[in-house]
Amino acid sequence: MSGVKLLATGSALPQHVVTNHDLEQIMDTSDEWITSRTGIGARHHCTGEESHTSLCLEAAKKALERSGVKAEEIGVCLVATLTPDFLTPATACVLQKELGLEHDTVCFDLNAACSGFVYALHTAQCLLAAAGRKYALVLGAEVLSRVIDSGDRSTYVLFGDGAGAAVLEWREDYPSIHAVLGCRGDDQVLTIPGVNKGVPAVVHMDGQGVFRFAVEALPHCAREVAQKAGISLEDVDRFVFHQANQRIINFAVKKLGVDPAKCTGNIAHTANTSAASVPILLDELMEKGEIKSGDKVLCVGFGGGLTWGGALLEVAQRREGDTK
Image (cartoon, rainbow, N blue to C red; front, side, top):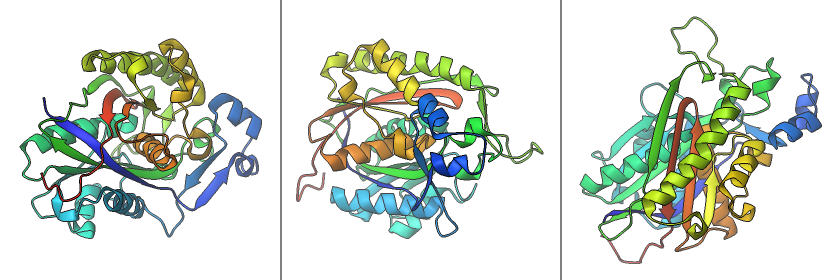
């Protein structure tokens, strides 16, 4: 068997914090209304000095430094996103230049919305198997403040900006991440119109439809990953779920019957950051020491598409002087 392990992570959040109390000043809402329905207390929004690219660079540099992997050792660079600064060049291509990655590094962006980072993990594992250099830089990043309507309280309160990055190592003796990916095509429940639609490119969402989908997809995907890996859910050291809504997560945790202490998140201060959600939470937990070397971490993303994706990441430490 061959696969990847997680070496290190990094993340970046904009400096500007928008609290629920701030939103009370500009729309008909309240801290109690938002918190009770979503679990969100604050979110980060980019200012004019910040961008999707700057967040990615900050997160990527942190992950590379912590991993001990040099830029010239990276064979694959992927960015999961639906809100890049440019349709082209891809954010991954910009990172290639700014980080000094080799010219033959495989670099591209992918869009699977809130499942994007997990899709990127699986894609990186597959690409690394054929790559000459066995390290990947994988990011999830969003600037969702660009695509939310300040007049729509049902969506405006939900989303935030941020970026998360991970450095992976591929080896023949490493386990597969046992990815489970799926899609149920739907352009009504959760959608952002394209540039040629003639309407504002803002999030449109059927909240009840998303809830019904998520509370089914999340536990189903988690079970499928564990089954594919040949382990029980009790064998998982930490669950990292997409931070969409605390009620969704609570419902799924109860349905799975796992220890809620293994499923704590960060939605209270980050809100929903779509593709950035899973890697930002991964980094926070790594930095707190709540995820450590040897741990098995089951990640699940779900959202627009409608898509879902799960993967079982094992954490490894880079061995000094080892260039395999």
